[in-house]
Amino acid sequence: MANKIEKQFLDTENKGPVRLNKYLSEAGVCSRREADKLIAAGQVTVDGVRAETGMKVEPWQVVRIGKKQVSRQEEMIVLAVNKPRGIVCTEERRERDSIVRFLNYPVRITYVGRLDKDTEGLLLITDDGMLAHELLAPGKHVDKTYFVRVEGKLTVENIRNLENGVDIGEEKLTMPAKVEIVGGSWEGAGGMQPGRVRIQNLPEVYTELHLTIHEGKFHQVKRMMAAVGNPVIYLKRISMGPLTLPDNLKKGECRPLTEEELLRLKG
View 1: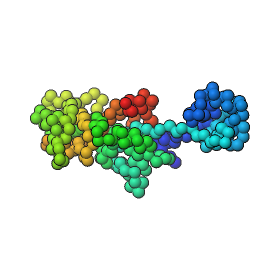
View 2: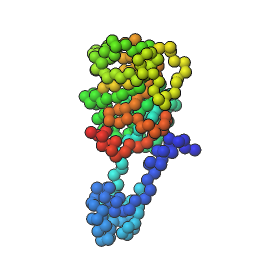
View 3: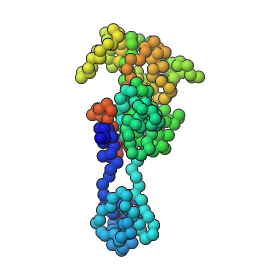
């Protein structure tokens, strides 16, 4: 039996029959009106049989204009996933907890901007290698914002260091980050935000913040917070570039991006 997320994918992938004129249009052959003329003229066959105006075709059927087979252009797969803890960003299906096994998608997919095994939140999944390359190219510096819960009080000095760049053992300091305190246990931190559930076993003093970075170095957020003396307790990515983790996307669920989101993503 398919799990919930697998069913979401199958529902997305299993497209039903479409009108033949639309099929030809999406194959880039001609407009729908011109397709109707070709069909009426007897120039189009479906599985070797002369096509009729208004008929529908299934994705697996063979459509030809004359002797030339035409194929409908497949839609690019781009999905937002609310990754839960414990899932590993790897394409290795041999890894029991890999993202590809967890999603169990019927075609080859890849992830964009890996998340650590114990990190939750927004992860993009696509079958478009060029899109993944564009978003991950070193010169792009795509903004990534995380909700971070750390031990101790994040001092003004620590915030300033994060905003100026910190030493995490690389050749250069990290690029300047954006820091916004959103909660914590100490006076002036903002306290518990409405609708938030109090987490058990928290240290007596902790800080919650939104941290926006522009790079994707290994364990970068954890290393940055450790560098200023505030180890990470919990980490969740809430946005990536122009995309924000949808409020209604539950942990472990996914959905295709809307046309508007795709346009924003491609810039």
